Length: 474
Image 1 (spheres, one colour):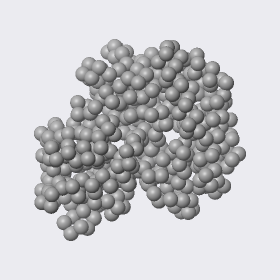
Image 2 (cartoon, rainbow, N blue to C red):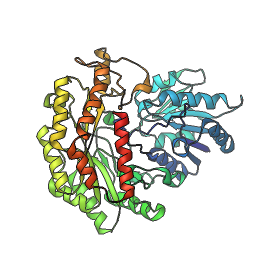
Image 3 (cartoon, one colour):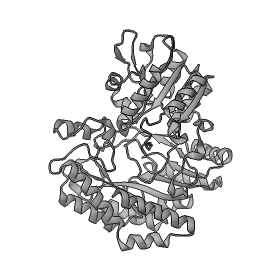
Image 4 (cartoon, rainbow, N blue to C red):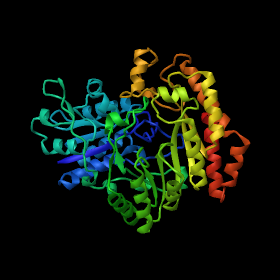
């Protein structure tokens, strides 16, 4: 069977960034992220003998017209579109365009995959002309759909679909994959790997590696547990290092982002990973996410020795009460310690804050800004609290009538607010985000630090571009 996996174009020509993590965070730095999730789907399909193609229209600048030409040439029987909350309306329009462009006797079926449709399968089918939705971990649901394309879809777990009468059916959830080592490595040969770049890696290509799935924490603003499960499933260190070696040797890429919130949750695993990286002499640069309560100085030094250059931490707020209400389960003291240890270990620290969580006031916003300055991480980002569907925050916002729009395209975190709080309006939150970013980045201390990091003309141009970006956005 021929299957097309698609990261669709935007119909207006605007380029949307793939969300950085399963919490919905995305960068303002102009990064272009690899479609590793689609590459995983492709790997499972190829392993079973299916003919598979990935089109990353965003990365390759493919227009909707060119997309239709490529669909006609490839003639797939299944098309799976990766969608996110802010791109869902656009992606539904892309599916409608493709559907209307097919001949009347076409047997082509189109569907979605992604976190948004996983938590809203019925609503997503009702709001589109899609034929199906892959719920949760999609690899083996899609494989079964391809294998049983002409059979009874009601027996395929992990699938929501529109039956022959037009009625929407939601099948039972598919059990999570217990042994992640059994999944083949992503089919990166189908991706435009040289297109995926970020300023941190000096504009060089990078890949994302997913060493684990699942999160045991229940932060009210995050849907990781709802989508990937509340139990951490770690790949073996051997398996992860084999993938790293393949990326280096086969694709000549030495910049890696570990895409997981669980990178340091199990210390013995993290230590084993860092030791094996050094033992196998895997020379590459890498960055990842962590929690401030799951690191210590010795482990951070080992991570630095193994090539780690930056760690992102979710600090969220400088007010302990807001952290507690958000079920973050960290303290301000832990945040201070983790940032200090990280910098002392020689690793750059990136701190994320969220403006507009329940309980937020102008006073608590000022506390977060002051705390960010006190922590003095190398980089910081203040997001606006966005109640993504599938999160407890979304339900809180609905119950309290805080949502000011149901337009998914507005569910961004940069310069857009879709809810108010008990004390602040949506426009207050936008103003507060600008204030926070300006007050942190427009400090003499920050300017001096960035100047000291300039190594060459290329670095200087990068700093100027980043500075202009901050000025224009905030």
